[in-house]
Amino acid sequence: MEGSAKTPTLDFNAETGVFEISGRSIPENSVEFYKPVLEWLDAYAKAPQAKTIANIKLEYFNTSSSKCILDVLKKFELIAKSGADIVVRWHYESDDEDMQEAGGDYKDIIQVPFELVEIDE
Amino acid sequence: MLGLLAFLGMALGFTACGDKEESEKQEKTAAESGVILYESYVAYDQYKDDNSAEGVVAKGTAAVNLYQAYQAYENNKENKEWTKEFATSAASTAVEAKTDIDINDKEAAKTAISEKLLTALTDGTISEGSNRVEQIQAAAELYKILNGVF
Image (cartoon, rainbow over all chains, first blue to last red; front, side, top):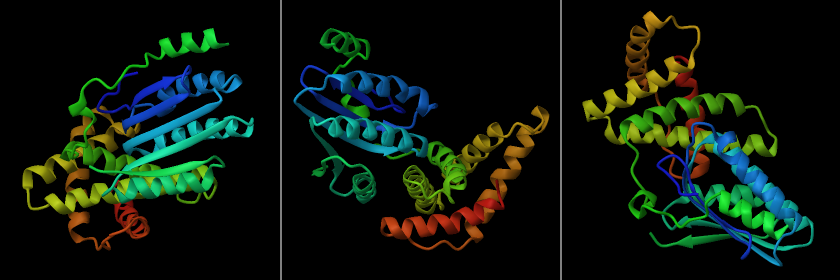
C-alpha cells in the first residue's frame, strides 16, 4: 500500500517473508489504518516463511500510531514464539536520536530478535 | 494458506513507494506543529500515569512529540506569521475536539486559546532537551503550562 503525507508505505510480501513499513505515520484514525495490517499478520502467522524479516523505516509517528506499531511488533513476537526465524530491523537516520531511542524502547519491550540499523541521511 | 496470503498480499496492494520526494524527511509546517502540540498534549495527559508497556511507549512518544512541537515554536518564534499559524492551528484542533463549545462561539474560542497559548509559551520556563530523557522532562514542564491553556 502506497504511503501518503499522513500514512506509511506498507510493502508486505508473504512469499518472500519480507515486510517493510516506511515513512510517516500520523493517520486520522490509527486503529482503523492498522487493523488490516494486524489481520494480515494474523493470517501470515499461521504459515510463516522459514525466515521473516521486518524492516521498519519510520521517520515520524504520533502517539496513537506508537501503540499500533507495538501491536504490529507483538504479532512478530507471536511468530517468533511459534518457532519461526524472524528479525525486526528498526532503521533510523544517523542524526535522528529520537527514532533511535524509540526503537530502543520497543526493543526492550518486545521479545524478538531486534536490530537497530543506522542509515546515512 | 499460501493462496490466501497471496490474495491478501494483493489486496493490500504491496507496491513500491511511489513518490520518492514525499518519502523524504520534511520539516513540519507551522500548522502541522500546532496540531501535533495539541494532540500530543492530550495523549500525554491520557498516558502520563500509565506504566504498562503500552503506556510507557505511548507516554514517551507523546512527550517527545510534544517537546518537538514546542521546539519548532522556539525556532520560529521571531517569525510572527509562523507563530500565528502555529497557535491558530493548535487552537482550532483544541476547539474542534471539544463538544461543549457552541458553534457560534468557536471563532471566539479559537482566538482566545491562540492568544493564551502564545502568552503561556512566551512566559513559561521550559528546560532545553538535548536528548530523549531531557525532552521527556521538558515535556512534563510544558504539559503543566499547557494545562492552563487548553
